[in-house]
Length: 538
Image (cartoon, rainbow, N blue to C red; front, side, top):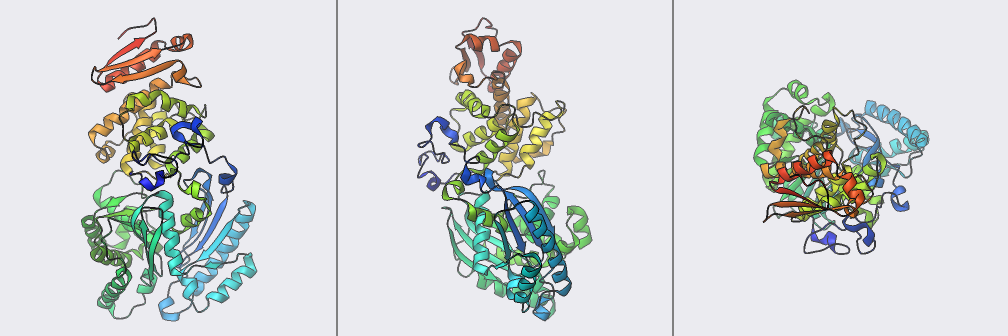
């Protein structure tokens, strides 16, 4: 993940691209910065609730936003189809309205029971455009006490873009959010700023109401997309897709390509791959696609029309790459609640620190472990050191798992966790490092070797080495290992030197520690040298 220089203006180094860490204000925290998740500013985000009334679904999410990466304390969705038949009637779907009111009544009770604050209730295109939208809002207020805030199309686009920024700080390109009744485009400028925003009626539920058959639908999509993208003349490097229909298409793409990691967030596709998948969708029965992907019938009925919209967007925008974002409007509302400082913290590091504080046997040791192993990786780029920091913070959060499965659990937690700011390759790198922190080899772990396709061989070896470094460093389970032993890698001389500087360090360096030190040196392809100890075996 490339860290934009603008994020380093206040606290980091513009030349190295280091993530801002508030080092100047809190030098004792070193490269990790001062923790924010335990401060009053972050704790106030511990129960942020969002009720999102869309054209197809009504969803209630409660975020624990204190860790900067959104943790989903509660998440429930009802596919009500409020926007179904809107093109014919101009009104909310009658049965969908009953189901939505029932769901909102339940959500209001849950929100009170969970002491959610703030609770943000928003509605998009269906309620916004429907003739009986005001009547529905009044009914909801009277029955549930929920006051619905209507989002205009441009505001919906802005919030969706902010949701992407929550998971991709420094994202640059175009955000495309598809709902049941509308599609929005928004520009993100790589500086945390949302630029031009546009909205259209290109939602599958509205497209279903177009008369004249397939030809009329194709013509309508082509004309609407042309109008939508007219104000975005520059070819975007990346098109970020937000919305359930896009995610369903991405699942089809994963199955078609036999992709080894079924995590939608940060899933990347080329325009060529998208076109092949859209063709596959057009040639395959919806029931077969559902069976392949586990997509609901309500969602799958929207996918064929959504795929036609995507095909035209890709054709006219000509992006270099397409990426799926699991974060959108709801996460954008959480982002709205964050301060400037919290927004600009690294979501990966903050989430890892939160995980360590809540689950590790020795919270705070991860920072000390990083200082101990860092000399082995002193030549690593800033983006790689960021992963090393995260691995050190997470190195012991799965200690409660059964010892026979601990390595596998570590890998699964890293690759499947709800974390922002991680490419799929970086997930595998982090997972491998944590696996090898507990186990020297991958045999017997149930490891999916296909995942190695997501990382170059050199990075696979580097992740294994990091795991061995943490495995050795964990033997010095004292507050500050560097007070008792220091590592130094001398690549030109092909030597890894451990200098034991205290009696406590010498006492900690037993037979198992020696074996792990030798294993680390072997992974580096260098000679192990121990100074200041009675045990000097090589």
